[in-house]
Amino acid sequence: MRRFSRLLSPAGLVLAGLLFLAPFLTVSCDAPGGYGRAAPGGTTTYTGWDLATGSTPDVTADKLLPPEQRRSDVLAPQPLAGTVLVVLVVGVLVAIGVGRARTRRGVVAALAAIAALFLLVNQATVRVLVEERLREQLTGPLPAGKEIGDFVHDQGGFGFALLALVLVALGNLAGWVRLLRAPGDAAVAPPASADAGATVPGGSAPTAPLPEA
Image (cartoon, rainbow, N blue to C red):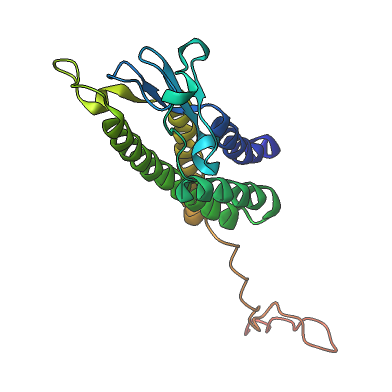
């Protein structure tokens, strides 16, 4: 059972890393003029990997603009997204390789919390970048009652990756606190005093004095 519970932390971190292949952010191109390569009515989808590496996002296949009308939808590699992946790798190595439970749990909790924080900041940063680019590409006024942010949506890949990191951080933090409060090694017994029952070196135990008559 203990071995199984120890596998939960690296499994959670690996899951968070795999979720980078899932959608993190989408742009619904109902805005006037569409967005990037997508015509109005299409959707541009950024995975976590796209954000970390600056790869080209996916666009609804039947909603591509003609080549001469396409604009840029590729974002520069996001340093925080790349840092999260590096932290996840380090966390997996620590969770598997460190033997001392208290040290392992403390370090993994800290790494998972850092990764979760960086992931949140990265998502907020990317939203701002995408909204600014969408605003620059508008070809007309927005529909009544709409704002730029209404066309940019967080997706499940980001949400589940964040959830996995939070659970790993909280689980290891709880384990670290429990181990921190656990009693230490048993105290070393004090040396035996030379009482009446002690053995005298080189001889037998001394006899008790005879009672007086």
